[in-house]
Image (tube, rainbow, N blue to C red):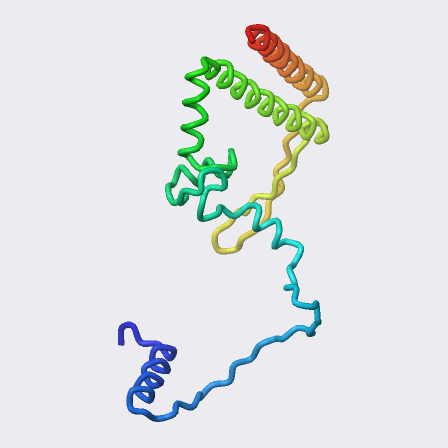
Length: 188
C-alpha cells in the first residue's frame, strides 16, 4: 500500500473521532526527558552555543536598512559583510560617486591575497612537520577487504629544497603585495 504509515493511520483515527464528537484516547506512550527545574526569576536559560548560533544565523531583516533579506545574494553578503545585497550596492555606488571605488576594490583584493599567502604559509608549516614522509592506508580486495600501508618518502635534500623554494615564493609574493599596497595608499 503506497503512502501507508502508522502515524498517518493514527492521525486519521484522531481526526475521525474529533469530527464524530467523540473523545480521542491515545494508544501510545510518549517518553521524554525533563531536566531539573531552576527558578531563574523570569529569565530564560540559554546554552553556551545559542549566542554563537544567533550571531551566525541570517536575520529576516537587514540590520542597516530593515528590508526583508530573502534573496540568495543577501545570504552571501550577510555572511561576508553583515548586511544585505542592496546595502552593498549602495555602499559601492557611493564609493564610485566619490571616486574611491578603485582603491577600495584593490585594497580588498590585496587583503584576499594576504589571507591566501597566510594559508600557504600554514600549509608549508604543516608539510614541514611531516619531514617529507607520509603513510596511507588503502582498502584493497573485494571479497576479503584488507588494509595495505602505502609509504611515501621524499629525500631529505629534496625536502629541504622544496621547503626553501616555497618559503622564498611566499616571501616574494608578500613583498609584491606590500609594494602594491604602498602604491595604492600613496595615491590617497
